[in-house]
Length: 157
Image (cartoon, rainbow, N blue to C red; front, side):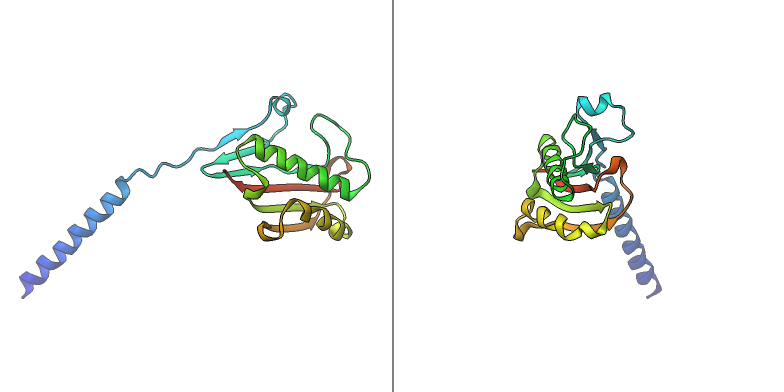
């Protein structure tokens, strides 16, 4: 009986080792990040990429409410800045193989949490009721007097 138990345990051990060996030999190619930016962004020598692509995901850096190539924020406060920031998000997504419909998570940073309701009213226009991404919102101190900065994660088309 002891010999059968030993053979059985040996069989289990060898089968287990073979199964683990097969799993570890399979190609588990880890996707390397691809750092994406326009020539205009690269010329500014900012310390971040506009987006990073890893596998089927696109991670956008935060954007504020000013038009590309301009230094002034959209005039008029939180609503125009939110609209412009989301247009910037949309443009970056589309330039890099995604779209607003593929956004799965947003992070909205407000300079004044009192702007929350006004920001939400504009934000909703960019995301249909049945396709709203997960989101976090909080108040922070933002650069250049911006009222909002938005960062998004999206899948590729």
